[in-house]
Amino acid sequence: MTHLSSTIEAILYLKAQPLTVIEIAEYARCDRAAAKEALLELMEDYAHRDSALEVTETPSGYSLQLRDTFHSLIQTLLPADVGLGALRTLAAIALKGKISQTDLVEIRGSNVYQHVQELVELGFVRKRKQSDGRSFWLQVTEKFHQYFQLNSDQTLELTQYLGNNSTPSPTTGETLS
Image (cartoon, rainbow, N blue to C red):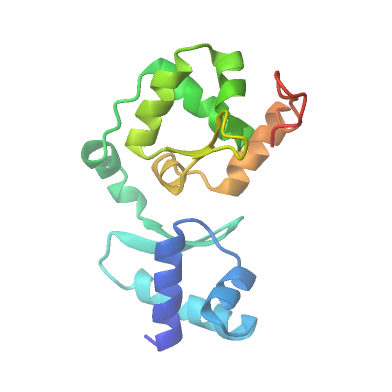
């Protein structure tokens, strides 16, 4: 395996989501043709390995992921005891993309505070103080995308499909996206 293939393997591992050839070429600091050739070499290498991982091409790009035969281990080794309320809160955050905690409380009720704390501890949600210091911005993390096997593009497509892409904020009237 060439150095470029190894570099691309590291990039796919670290990004933990599908990347286009253009993105891979940018990260690897090479041209698209070289990136594509190294990707094919990497895919062929993984195809001949007796490995739990594989490099696959999806509609969103190329990714390094667990082979389907090992997906049962995810539930066994990475259990996330998320209650139904917290799961619904997580879904609301994922569908909005970025939402203030204040707006989330308006939508889901005051139990959101406990749900958010639990989701932050589990690593599914990132919580950042707003510039005015009065509330927090909430967003899903890479762990969310990995655990639920969704990439950012799929989450956005789902949001658009459900018509939530331009939902106005209950408190400010701003579009939450």
